[in-house]
Length: 120
Image 1: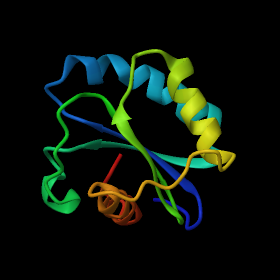
Image 2: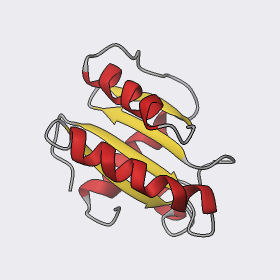
Image 3: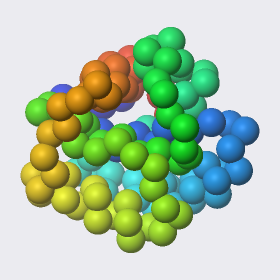
Image 4: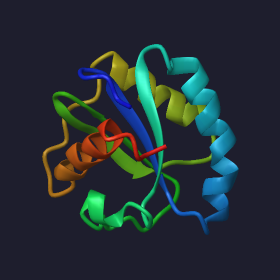
């Protein structure tokens, strides 16, 4: 469950996706590294499609970073741990601007899902 005010780092994935399965170890390492500072959730977008508002995710894995200010990042990531690590560090430091576009609501839906305890 997500603590209010903390950064949420969610991996939006699909069970059938081999790249997502391969990325799980990288995501677990990020969780271990930044778990004291941020909340992490592994969300299968097919299982949680209704709660997420049927997101239009075409590339996997996709990282979503959101905090109380709003959506900070939403995009497919490479399998390199350093890329995701840099994104998380920049979000925690406040160096990623809030994204205000059509996908911004997805961040709040993901936070609500995780607060409800069903993601992960």
